[in-house]
Length: 290
Image 1 (cartoon, rainbow, N blue to C red):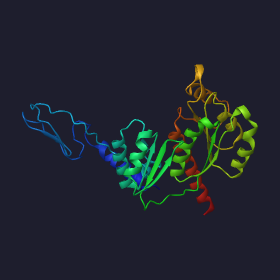
Image 2: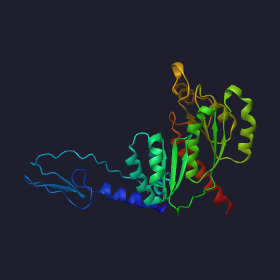
Image 3: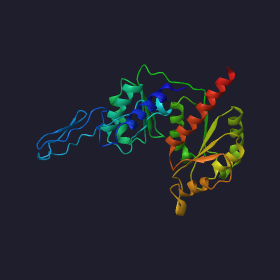
C-alpha cells in the first residue's frame, strides 16, 4: 500500500470538504475579510495591492513551483521541458527538484542552455544525452533505484533515435533496465527478427517502438510480441503526411492487438507509460517469488 497516496487523498478530501473555492483562501481555515477602501489583501505570503492604490509596474520575476513529491505520489518524476523556458527558469526548477529528490531531469534542451547548466551544477553529477537533447542532474548522495522492470526500446530508423533515447532515459530514471534496438524498420524487415527474438527471450515487460514516415513498425512488433507495445510516432517524414501525422494515424489505425500510442515525438510520455507497466509487472513478479 502506498501511504503517500493515502495522505494525498486525505488532503484532497479535506480541501473538497471546505466551502467552494472563492469563499476561503488557499490556507484552509483562514477566511478572507472584505477589504476596506485603501486596505490591502494578503493571500498566503504574497501581498495584493490596495484596492484604490495606483497599480505598480508588473514584475518580470517568474516564480516556479517544482513538484518533488510527484514520483512518490504518481510513480513518475516531474520532467522539466527545457525548450520553452529561459535558462534561469530551468536552473531554478532544477534546484527545487534537487533539493526535494536529489535529482532533476530536463528534456528538449536548447543548445544555449547546456553549458550554463553544466557550469551551475558542476558540483553535481551531470549526465548529458546529446541525441535526446536531455540532461539528468544528481546530488552526490543520490541513489539510483532499480525496480526489476525491463523495457525494450526499438527505433525504425536512425532518425528516430532521439525520441527513442528520450523514452529510454525516462524509463531508466524510473528504475527500469533498458534494452535498445535501433535501425530495424520495415524497409529492411529482415533486420528486425533476430534482435526482437533476443529481446523477447530476455523477458522484456513492455516495448516502445519509435517510427516516423509511414509508422508501420509498431504494428509489426505488436503483431509478433506477447507483451504490451507502445507506439511512439516521430516527426520524420515529408509530403502530405509529414511531421509525424501519417505515422500517428497509421499507429492509431493498427489492426495488431496490444498496441497503444502516444502523441508525436512524446518520448517522455512513452517512457513513463512503459515504466509504469514494467514496474507493476516487476512488483507482481516479486510477490509471486516470495
